[in-house]
Length: 445
Image (cartoon, helix red, strand yellow):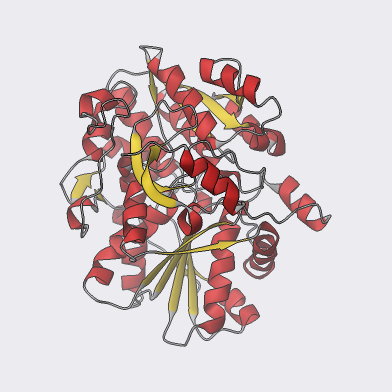
């Protein structure tokens, strides 16, 4: 047995909404001026109405529009693969499976929500979208989705990744997207950051500020977000629902589920459909993996904070390093975010999710081992999940089934691998004193 495949008819017809099943209610977004919960109509200034409805929905399952499912069938359902060669290389007695999300046109899990958000906006008469992107996978995905529905897409890409990954920009442009290195001089926030930090490598927090400002100041434009918010994790549950069916088809249950985490979209959509098993007392662990250079879950505080550096978003209750955090230019650009999804943060606080962190050189070593055993070169972000899989597999038993989300390939990240092979990658752990400084600037709620 190598691959577990589903046919097109088995593509989920509904997304799973975890909100009604959580042991505690996710704290709502808060207006920083009034300190009161944000009203839905306030969010609709930048988001599609349907996405806002999904943010707070109490429906356990939400229909996937047929137009979205039609686009999904370009690559979904994705295969669940037994990593037998990796098992042998590690010498583990456990079974290892990976959900291969790299087979999508943009090469990652990101179009699962990009297609949905583009559809809802188009359905509501919007033809222009703005967004941010770290490593470029989300920007690529939204540009792809925009092409499917005839929409204009403007992407603010973190400067470090813009310079490291030029082919991601070209991929966006091939689908009609326009990509700019953030911070830019196109927004007031971008100009301010460039003046204060002229040599900055940028951050997801800054890029979010620019994209939100752009959408908020143009009546014909809305904002699409690639991670963090509830509706994004909702759309990504198509991944976990497929995994659930695929494992059932081979009569297996996972004991360990692993994913890399920046904002939490790929990991959230992957494991949330299995959360009820843990709540029912079954033996299953959920492990979120992040860089030591951006350790929000492992070293951050669980408090209300801005979702962006420019402080234009509502306050979110999440694990955060502080919205003023500007991370080092590590190659896992998609994991360089100061905070985490409120849903994921709540589950971490309740000890239902574990968090681990690693240095970038050791995760690249893990990615190379995966490439040489399983044949696919992983994205730098995905390498973090693979490193955790290897470490867990070393101490696992024959009763363990480890499943992880292979969130994207690294075909546009070859410069990062070149730096690794040439010994130019540096390990970096974000200093405790810098975290303390950033946390002091967080608003008190």
